[in-house]
Image (cartoon, rainbow, N blue to C red; front, side):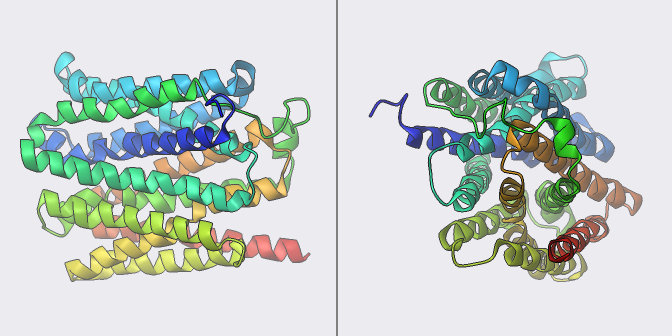
Length: 394
């Protein structure tokens, strides 16, 4: 069967899209400590990079409500990968090109954030529209590739830095940029459908008038914040807070986090027909709180790292699970629904790491206190899930 008629290629290109998303969100954080030492950036400037990344993605999510349907999925998703590729190249070369290195880095972050935002909005509805069964399982499997991409970024980057030193990071940035560059070509060839025709889908005004939909929006905020509050700072927390080496910090912190997050998504995709998604979500929220407590309150580094891994496992199903619950509740939500949910998730991804960074700064760069303070997000998530069950019973 031709690539233009085979939806298996659509799914494969979508999984590479999430690998691209993982590169966009997690490559630069591995360089945070190096940037501080080489360019003398402050913790506030480093924190601002995270905020800018997810802030730009949030703006793009909002704009996607309007332009995604008008321009078409294919043009948007191909352009997204081009933006991501240019931005990743920029991480390596812009700081040296600009008179102010921080300005150059901000420009690079803005470029790949535009690509990441569009990818986040469109990949889920593209896969949802494919003629496949077990939609929630496929959604969970799709999102697991974000985790495998995250692990690849950490493992291969750590290997690169071990062989050629972190000073050669511009070369690695160029190598990572080849992934979205390839996928831009791939997406230009595969078949792409819509979840619902534009004329039949709900309009934004109709969608936001549904009170139940706002519960899902808040769930996405909490899901993104619960995930990224630790994910974005895992490397720095392991290196500075736990006093271990850069290599050990990357492998023990974000690598374990990604592995267990991907494992939970893979497990759910396998057993989704046998377990209740709501129960899984609620259990994940409770486990997330335990992981936060263990990470932030333990005085033994090994227990803190185990807490980081537990947190990764607990947050795995939250984001794709919320999308699946929303799709079931609002089957005619269309592009506006996925765009608003992505906007809410990216808002959480921006708020979570910012809260950790700002709170840590207030307490002499104590990342333990910052992570403990961010526990408010999984607590709120549980409250929302309980309210959702009460509302369903009524």
